[in-house]
Image 1 (cartoon, helix red, strand yellow):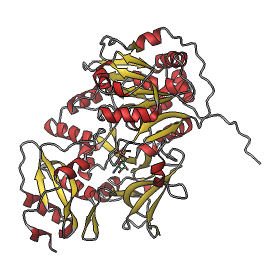
Image 2 (spheres, protein in one colour):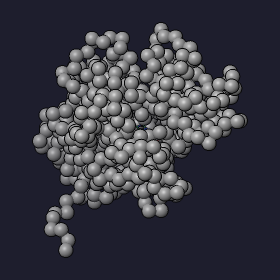
Image 3 (cartoon, helix red, strand yellow):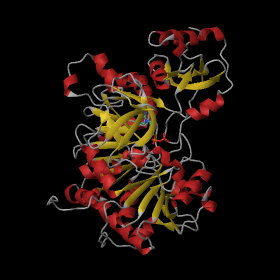
Length: 544
Ligand code: ADP
């Protein structure tokens, strides 16, 4: 017998309608390029979404057509997030930080038909426009500039449309959005989210033991909207009725802290490098900011060093550590402590909180080794595989990457991890970043985290460099805090309390800045290239 329940499609319309009905006066606040804030309420936003959806259909948008965006994080971008899929199309945020040729490639591969672009990003568009064939291009007056010649105005498009528009019926499994992986480990691949996957992912983010986003929250969403939909928050916040704060083109750590204080942010989400900068600002001015209450800081995208979690705690910024990927929408695991851990000693709690956490509901994990599944013993590494209703089942038009899925349909993440008996995942490395030395694996992440706990160190990335005898050896690239000086020997000694001699980097090079990926992670491929010919001053230091 089949269940006798209504078969209501899980579509983005339900999220938007709920936000506008129950939370019409809750705001999306956007930081403009000139540093001022603009505000729109969910009620007004929903009307503009209808206008845009109607206008897109009138422009010829058909089922499944892609609407690309080249936009920063602000409310008009949220409008496109709802309008394109609710008109039956697909919203495709382009990663504006990629090389113009790469953006053109991605847009061509995705077969984007229309483009919505911020006025301030028009020069970026001009660098690849010859290689694309958008039928119409609309310009958003994000900074108040005039629409450039040859383009159409987004505001005029909306003004000539009407909010009298019924969303078409949509199958919950129809595509709603598309994001490309940021290409850290190879050519970008398209992930196509469905209405259903986005709705379920948002519900999961709202759960208390996940991000616990509710109508009482003010959420600062720092991940760019082209990076896994800003981690799903532009959908999750309206679903919950939470106020959403968007950082526009980005700003300094000090400006971020100002806006967090002024707007009463309760949860702020971003990659570790942002929080390393914020911590630096807090160290320089420890009494500079007073938050209205405890602030949750969601960190993901790369592993935050344990020292960062501890230090942010001291300033009333409580870190929630989560793991995910473009292919996982992204939320897959969250590192919250279980009730049974309440009485644990602080050190053990921090150790656990710096792991990536256990699977959120509906997501399943396993660790695979060539000989089969690895035990969850906190010691045996394997490749993390994942499955669930918001995990990609394939890439868009990339048959060459079909081997990223196991024959029984699990997604192979490429992350090497251990899992402890409580189910907490610890990512040791991406398989490509793992350092293979003399037949043993060295975790670059462990070394980086230990180095960043040194008081003189602001940032550290550890990479593999080729070695004739050992195949590969670790090299640490270190950025010191302003005014600090430290000798390599001291860092070596600092690490030697936690690591065996063969695991300690052969060298420590000091630099002003570690290159970043387009979404703010350490760009290790560039470092590997840069230091390929680096040679250790003394060979003897490697011998055990
Ligand atoms: P890209 O592959 O371009 O970096 P993604 O954001 O999809 O884009 O990257 C996902 C990868 O980021 C994961 O496979 C993992 O290696 C890394 N990652 C994400 N979150 C964490 C985390 N909390 N700790 C360690 N690594 C993480």
